[in-house]
Amino acid sequence: MSFLFQLVREDEGMPPAVVFEDSTTPGLVPVWEAVGVYDALYNSDGKRARDVSRAIAHGLDRVTEDPSLAQLMPPGVSQTEAIRFLDNVNRGCTTHGAAWIQTR
Image (cartoon, rainbow, N blue to C red):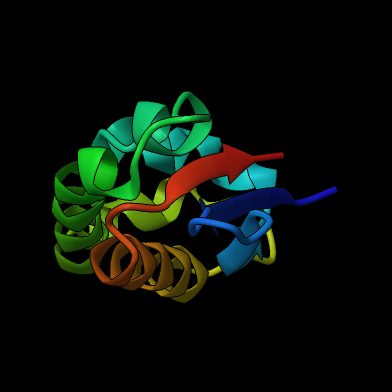
C-alpha cells in the first residue's frame, strides 16, 4: 500500500476536483520524521497547501543535502524517490496554495 497526497480545489459552482496527486511508499516515514515533514504530510488533512509549503520546502532541502539519510531508507527505495516525492509535493503546494490537502 502506498501513501497518497492530494490537493483538492473547490471553485464556485463546481464540484471539488483533485488538482495534484502523488504517492510514495509508506516506508519513508523515518525519513519524513528526520527532516521534519511528517506532520506536514500525514497530519495535514483539511489544511491549505500554503500552510505546509514552507515545511515541505525545508524538508526537501534537507533530503537533497544530507546523504546520511540514505540509511533510513527501506530496502529497495533510494533517496532519489524521497527527493522526487517531496519535490513534486512542494511544486504542487506552491502552484495550488489555496487547495486543501487530502491524504490516504
